[in-house]
Image (cartoon, rainbow, N blue to C red; front, side, top):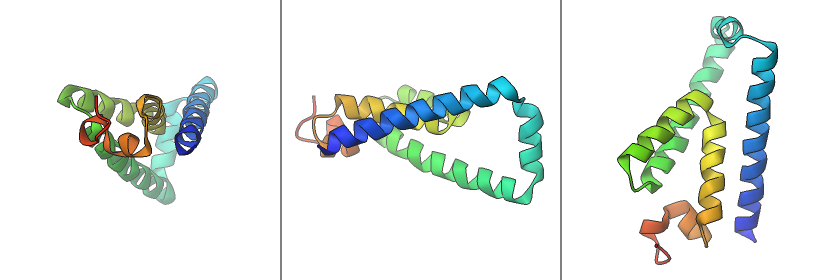
Length: 114
């Protein structure tokens, strides 16, 4: 049951972030509005906060991954798309996992490893 919930939440997060990014790009320029965000004190705080969260999310991805190259690719995806990449990774990992332990720890660190 827990894996089903994780999959559903990951699918929702992936879809929500994809829709938000596409919607934002369709109405505004990232360079113009991004500059306005960086000009605001709380905008900078928010960016620092979210990028620190992205780093810790990516560290989990890198820890689970078997390949350094795949970890680097996920880092680039996270830097460019943020939560979209992290939710996408979580969705894929949750679909491949057979237990919560395998989802959290990765297949090579569990008894269920392939």
